[in-house]
Image (cartoon, rainbow, N blue to C red; front, side, top):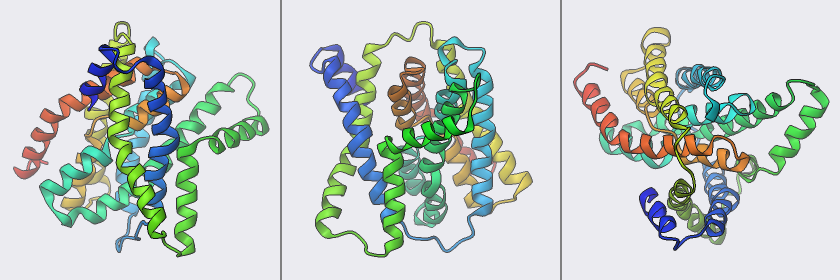
Length: 302
């Protein structure tokens, strides 16, 4: 889908205006529909999530801080205190790559850890990225009142954040989804992932990766090497997760940056070339790295 979008844009079948329109549709309509439906129909898992969350999101925290520090030394990533870079180095492609891969390889027995990680993945990272960016933009004359007000306004205008909140609140009502609403949301949700990937491909044609190669490779290294190593250490030597849960946490940590990182970068017009390249190249590399990782898991090395 990424290559298809790139080809259509290069051939000028999809122009710049159409590409931006696709991005707006994904960010304001399709992905919010997917997240609302997911949160509204989420079932509580019959398992204690705390150790798994501590392992996976502990790895994200370490990676987030490492990316923010790294962004200071790389011009193509040095925006808003590294908030966009931290998002790209932490937000993995779990929905459209990690989940199908895990279910195909390990079977339905991994449904519980998958659900536990996915249930708070997008809300935490989107909120953290928005908060990080707003705090960084006001570091010189920081005001709690001003920053809080602008952050609330920013989040209120963010369709993805509002969809997550609305879906969570709707779930607590216990009303479920009317069949017509459920069908409509499902149709939009089905369009979200392919459209996001196609829009990502279109964006790649509009940016030169020259001058952002260092940023691109730094993000790939942080996301696909540094983060899984941290998660592995935490799962084996700090929290001692069950072997299968540990494998899922490490596999998810090793996934390349997801399309949501691109959407965050595109929305704020920060580090788009480096992040687009990291997603595209990282997704291609994942065909090799994920295969090696699963082989090591099956061999008992990990």
